Amino acid sequence: MAMHLLQRLHEHAHDRGSRIAIQELSSVGTPERSATFAQLLALVQSYASTIRKSVAPGEVVVIALPNRIDCTAAFLGALHAGTVGFLMNPSTTAHELVRAASAASAKAIFGCDEAKIAVRDLNVIP
Image 1 (cartoon, rainbow, N blue to C red):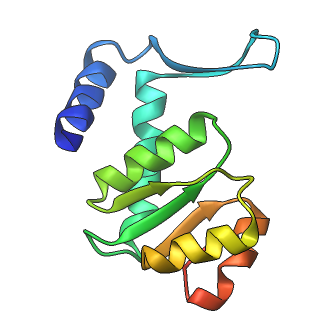
Image 2: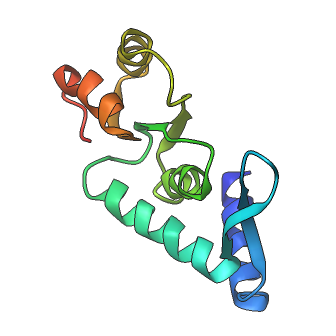
């Protein structure tokens, strides 16, 4: 399924590159930021490249980012890199984050500074 999803993203970036793929909304529902299919694919590839530098296929990457475009791109980037994207709420307590990352044997984390600090003793790459 992951490969099908990524294949579709590549197809849409090629065929509909300038069309909006994803949009962030404000708390009142007005558009704040958007990304075209081409822009989303570029973000996904950038995250995948970063992940491949330090995480082997099949290993776990924790993604503790707000529900924004970068969260989606990081998750798809993890799939693109052949890793397992483990989504966590960025407001998760440090204790819960450490426990979950440890239980999952996470090798890297994409998250806010607080999340990176919380897992630094686990030898997780920020």
